[in-house]
Length: 150
Image 1: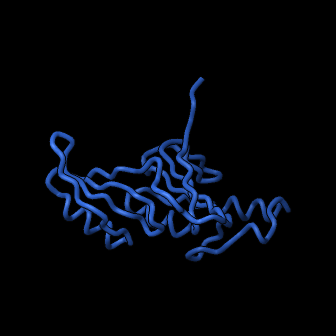
Image 2: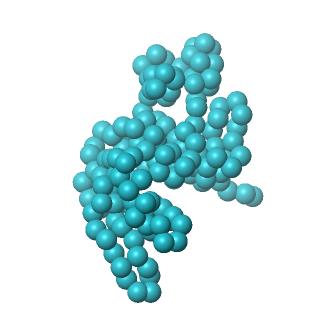
Image 3: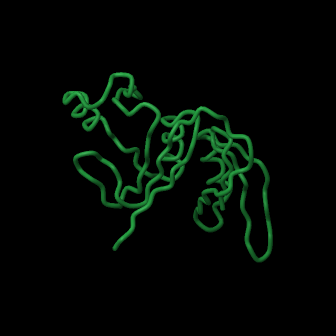
């Protein structure tokens, strides 16, 4: 038996988070528009379950990104490999993440990586330089979720 997985991330705005993380990781935003249209046409999806985002129909409250080289379902554009799914939840983030994403750039290119991430909406929290673990920045995504850039 082969298991699949995806990392599900609770958030306030799934589409904004998916936009940020797709750009940050150089992943692909899943385009569920054709699937949304098929489900709506078949009466399987209520209008209130749909939102328009950047000119595309999307599922309200859910958005995903996937690695561009991984397999995906051509009918739904849903990734079958490395994938992050953002789901909106009513409660705000209140404590430190119990897990986080580490983004590794090219050796010796930490400052350009951090600057690029800031340009996408991230913010710096603290620089770490710990032998032998390495040198990295603790950062926040647009909703305040911690991640590391090294």
